[in-house]
Length: 352
Image 1 (cartoon, rainbow, N blue to C red):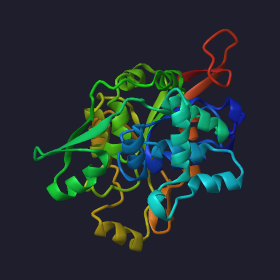
Image 2: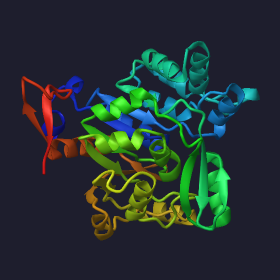
Image 3: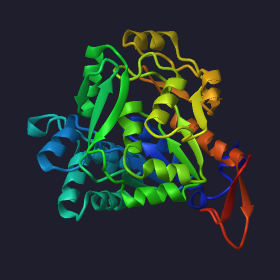
């Protein structure tokens, strides 16, 4: 395993485009940057709650929170700068707001565009790889439930689902014709591996797939395509879901067969942790492999879980290593001095 994931220097590691948002994505990035420098994080900008929502409403800018989390995860800074980026004000009108969000908001005010502001913050933090908003359009998320009711606003979906007590039928972006950032589409097209997730299914991953051009770029790519499934179901979003339910929702909002590999956790959790999650209606996700196979998706089970402060999460390093293992096992690097070079100076040919 060590030989597989460290075969090349990080500068020559595979080009990986990761698509998602929230804490799941930033947690995975912390692991991936230990193995490759060629990371492009493509991040949802549909958030409208918390400190990000306040800045979005007051300044008319895209929500900075998920972008800032990814920048922090990929940063290579002194401890003091890292502490400063994480700092949240406790009192006054800024209570609950993070310095990192305000820093990005200030850069947005003096930059020609939001993506330029993100690029400038990337330079300040000396990040590994790059972080790209999936779109710079002012998008909102609307959810429709199985009983026909609807709600607009990502931050309202949790509460509305609890009230309606039924599953989400679909989500859509408003406006529906929001175009993708060209650099995000280029990153997808140039990737050796495309990773969807982990993260909130309807509010972190799927919103990216609803942006014009993203699904088409994934479909036409020859990269290895992997969906990283969450380790737990999520209260207010995916209670009662299995892995096949997650895959079905992703295909429903994009296209059948968008990916053919799904990386799942195989580790159990302590009984007391499971009991606490059960009180919220959440549980360990079950990989119903037969149904997944019927959908054309191969399940790859690996021990990926860690428990921190009573919460079940992906272990960032284990997840990164298993993704690099999949890339090494499912792709063949062939030296070729003429054409078809990948980031490490080798052509990628997918195994059958």
